[in-house]
Length: 313
Image (cartoon, rainbow, N blue to C red):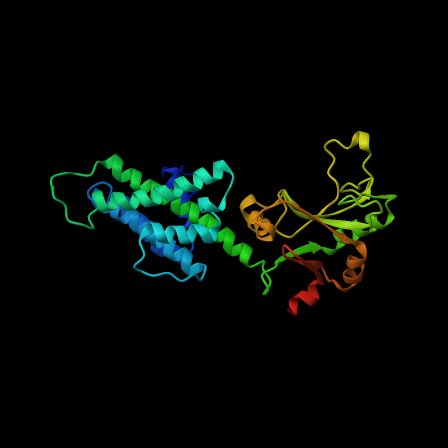
């Protein structure tokens, strides 16, 4: 255990890798990292080879974790593309210019590190044995590999966590606190105005299932209600948070973006959504709930269950 009173003199990347690869399932990747770092002083061509090996080990570990088949003879770019495609970070999966560019650059880095190993590493014979690999070249290969692996581990763990929130039919499992949902239903039922959606002239009393910054339920009653149960006056609503019921693990106020975004992304490829659900549907299920009400959500349908019913699936 590190003594918190003693400054940690290791480079930030080394500290990050120690944290990200702390789990035993990443031992093989961490071993490659230690080899790469350890060879920088006296065996720089070996360091480049270890850096490339780290990327390949990372890709194969991710594919094993995701239960995706691959061939051991595949080259590094092909392995990485398969990993990136299944983690949603392949450049072809994005239309936003920024992310398309960044993910494309990551893919290029992996390819080029592999090429550096072919040119500078010790995996192949060299025509000029007197040519020494410059330290800064070896450091670049090692640090690029370490940074890419940290990124892939974070994406992998986020994706695996999101998969645990999927029902057998592939729909997303959203869980909400029963007490908060009851408050929203009461508000929607008793509010003098029910806000419309889709241009309806006579909107029903409903809760909206919303996905934008997080995923949550909110009442369509107006005036809105704040967290303390008071009605929010239009002229004094600046900075006042309305009452919502965030889905478990999908509250930006308490959960990191990388934790809830894969869940949001699984609904409709990341598009924002707002689904009106009549309060009658909640009123039928809420009395059967113990502590949570569950919504199974897919792009084309939803199902509302009590937590007891969900456990029987």
